[in-house]
Every structure is written in structure tokens, then in C-alpha cells.
Amino acid sequence: MPALSLQQLQLINFRSYKRLTWDCPPGLNIIFGPNAAGKTNLLEAIGYLALARSFRQQQDQQLITWGANSFQVRGLCHSNGEKIELVINYQQHNNKKLTINGNGNRLIELLGIFPAIYFGPDDLNLLKGGPAYRRHFLDREISMGDRIYCRNLQDYRRILFQRNLLLRAIKAGRGKEEELEPWDTQLLVTGKAILEKRARFLQSLAPVVAATYRDMAGGEKLALIYRPGVADQEEWAERLKAGREREIQAGMTLWGPQRDDFTFTLDGHEARYFASQGQQRAVVLALKLAEARYYREILHVMPVLLLDDVFSELDEERQGALLELLAAADQAFLTTTEVGLLPARLRERSHLWELTRGREPRLTSGPAGAQ
Amino acid sequence: MYYPEPLNKLIAALGRLPGIGPKTAQRLAFHILKVPASEARDLATAIQEARQKTIYCSICGNFTDRDPCRLCSDPERDHSCICVVEEARDIIALEKTRQYRGLYHVLQGAISPVDGIGPEQLRIKELLARLQGGKVREVILATNADVEGESTALYLDKLLKTLGVKVTRLAYGLPVGGDLEYADEVTLARAFAGRREIE
Ligand SMILES: Nc1ncnc2c1ncn2[C@@H]1O[C@H](COP(=O)(O)OP(=O)(O)OP(=O)(O)O)[C@@H](O)[C@H]1O
Ligand SMILES: [Mg+2]
Ligand SMILES: [Zn+2]
Image (tube, rainbow over the protein chains, first blue to last red):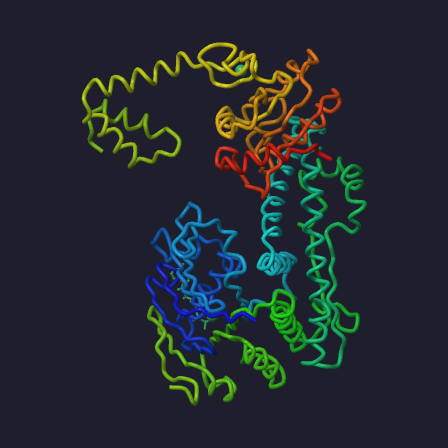
């Protein structure tokens, strides 16, 4: 399996970092510091190199340091013995620019070069939050290994946007119903491609999630169930025709992957309603661990792991599951406010970095046996 | 800024051109002031003449200085084949490939609800009129590979098939996701060779 790591991170005007140059070693890196020191911001910047998007579901605009009008994230990566320099520039109200080893590239070329998985407190939303969180998860994960999917998504968003406007125009008497036809055709073709890929992804992820949960928590049986925004693909075209008037009145496309969702059940009971807090955390952790396994077993890469303040919330057994995953990673970044809260066997194997607001992380100790 | 009024006007006019921001407009205006007066006058005349003497071809919609345009009145070209494009500048991109010897038809846009453009706003009636004589055997749809271009192609495909004419779509290899203008010659040449009928 190709070894993957970040060697150097450089930031200009990214969140709380006006300027940062940080040389980070492979292996385990623990970043500790008080609240608001910039720990999550640092992980966000590393994660930005994976998809050129924030994992916090935020606009690029919000990533710019207050008062500035652009930011840059530069990463020197080591992938399979090869050095790759990634530079992403974002200019306010403008487009993002990507260069790979000094050459200008389309953003889509970034996919798969530096896969990273983020796991943080907000991820409880994957269970408790609205369907948008889960679609965001699906899109990130599938895009990482599939450029055509990424392109399908872009097209689909544009088709939806145009089609919805046309529906409203028809309602207002500014368009004819038959003008919908070419948009319907594209909606169906692109939409089906997305539905299919999401179904396939969840199909291969579901057993891994179930097994991961069983190994870690035991007891109940966890199931992951896809709830597509079109119940029956074969009937989608019919549905569009039959529901034409409803869609025109609503001024909105009522069926399609934009309505997709998936749910978890424990022994058949909807987890978001019936699971205890501890069980809910275990479900989300199982999903995240399964995600990493999916990368290894299906995509054949071990992603860089970004674990944001997650250890303190877990009991010993679940910490153990996470430690096992960390042992398999080429590189991982963990944050905490209190190093003492981390398991000793983890600390001993890690580089410890102290973070003070606005500064570069300062190495306080390396892994036992090294140096 | 405290520039003399005529200079201000020039900067403002240049700044309204696409792709030209305030700084560039200023730089261009200063440049125009520095060059010999004859050069500036040539530029002004060129703009005026291009504007006066360039018209749209009444048949295909291409830019021309005489009507019908050179392409439409060339007996050497294949008058049984029409290639439909969004903009006049797409013709230049396609001509560069030297793969195509037929005629063109410029729609002057693509279907796009957000821009308020439906089939009515495009030069579709003019296209249908050209197919009336029965001389045209094939129509090649060479609208862009984005969703607006695709919608336009789908719409035309359905409309033209009812007339019994063969309709093909330019086969873009990988979706270029945009304008014909930016596709390279090799890609376009390949697209011509691999054009196919829409299912
Ligand atoms: N766009 C921005 N420009 C400047 N500063 C920002 C920007 N966005 C966030 N910040 C600052 O970053 C700080 C938060 O940083 P971050 O979330 O990384 O903290 P943290 O170390 O993870 O803290 P905690 O331990 O509480 O999670 C905020 O206090 C905010 O002032
Ligand atoms: Mg944080
Ligand atoms: Zn002409």
C-alpha cells in the first residue's frame, strides 16, 4: 500500500494563521493547546489539501483570515516515495486555483492525491443532524475516489438550478411545459448515475460498519440503510410526468438524489431516536473507522487521519479500536486540550506539539525510542 | 481620481469591456495617450469600421462583411451538412481542425433559464427554414459540453428528428466541461470523427 504523509504545511491568511510554516513528521502527531489556540483550524487546513473544501461544511470565504482577501494552503506531500507539492489559492469572490508541482491544474486533478479523513465532535451530526450532513459525507467520500462522480455532482447541481428556475418561470407564465423535456432527460441520466454510485458505496460500506461496530461495542446489531430520494429508479421518469403540476406549483424538483438520506438502526430501532448517547458515539465512530477501512480495502490507500478532540469522549474499549486504526496509519494528527487525557501508550508513540494561538506548533517531545 | 474629463471617459469606456478591470483600463488609457496620434486614430477607426461593416450573415448568423458570408456562398463546401454552434467564435475553433467542409448555423446562445433564454430566443426558426428545401441531409449539433449546451442539443435533436433529417452530436471525449473555444484542435478533430446519433 502506498505510504502517504504530509511533510510540510504552509499557510497564508488561513483562519487564525496569518503565516505558518510547519514541518511535520510521519507517524503520530499530537497537537495540544488551550481552547481557541487554532487546533481545529490546523486540521482543517490539512484536510483542505484533500478536496479543496473545508470539512466543516463552510464556504471558502469564511476560511480567509479576517481583514485579508485571499488565502493559500501549500502542502508538501510524500506519496509512495514521490514528492508532490500542492498549492491551493483562494481569492475572494474569485475562483480557486490549484497547482501541482508548479503546474496549473483543474481542481478535479486534486482528487485522490492526498486523501484524508477527519473525525471531530461535530460528526455526531452524521447521526443526529439533518440529511444534508449525510449527503455531504457521501459526496466527500465518493468523490475522493471517483472523478466522474465529482463531475456528475457538479452537473447535477447545475441541472437542478436551471430546472427549478424553469419550473418557476412556467408557473409565472414565462415558459412552456415542453421546455422541461431536455432538463428532465439530463436530470434522469445524471441523477441515476449519482444514485447508483451512492447505492454501491453504501452497499460496500454497510457490512464494514456493522462488523466494526460488533467488534468494538458488541451487543446490538448495527445496520446502515440507504433511503434514496427516488424510491424506484425505473419509475422516476413516470413520476416526473405524473407530478409535473405539483413540481410547477412548488417551483422545485421534488424527486432525486438531492433528497437522499441514510439511517442507522440498532437491532432494528432507528438509532437517532432510540440509541443512548454512548451508543450514538459508538455508531459514529464505527462509521468513521469503517470509512478508513473502506479506503484501505477498496481504494487501496491509507488516508491521513485527522482526529479532532475525540479521545476524551470515548471509553477504554472504543479508545482501543481507535488506537488500532492509528497503528495502521502512516500519518495522523490528533488534537487535545489536555495531553494527560490521552492514553499513555498513545503519547509514548507520538510527537507532542504545543500550540499557542497564532504561532507554529512547538515540538515538546518525540516518540520514545526515537531521536 | 482627478483626471481630465476626456481621460476619465476613456478609462470608463475601456473598463466596461469584458475581462478588463479598473487597473487594466487605466493602463490601456495611458498607453493610448502615449502612442503617436496616428496610432490612436487607427484604433478608433478600426473600432468604428468593424462595427459598421461587420454584420451577421442572414443565413448562418456568422460575422461577415458581405451577405451571405464567404462560407455560405462557397460552392466548394458541402451544402448538405450543417453544423450547429452556440456562438460565431465557435466556427473559428472548428474551422481550425480542417476536418469539416460543410456549412454552419449560429444559434447565438444556448438554452439557459437563469439567463432567460429559451428556444424562442435562439436562431432556431432560421435553422428550420434552412432545412425546408430538402437539400440538407445531416445536422451536426456542436453546442458546448456543459448542461446548457446539452439541453440545447437534446431540444434540437427531438425537433429535427421529426423532420426526417439525420442528427448527430459532436462526440466529446472526456467532457471538457465548457466552451468549444477552449477545446484544443486535436480534441475537436477527434470529436468530429466520432460524432454519433443521440439515443
Ligand atoms: N476567518 C478567521 N480569521 C481569523 N480568525 C479566525 C477565523 N476563523 C476562526 N478564527 C479564530 O480561530 C479560533 C478558533 O480556532 P480553533 O477552532 O482552531 O480552536 P481550537 O484550538 O480547536 O479550540 P477548541 O479547543 O475550543 O476546539 C477562534 O477563536 C477564532 O477567533
Ligand atoms: Mg477545536
Ligand atoms: Zn453564412
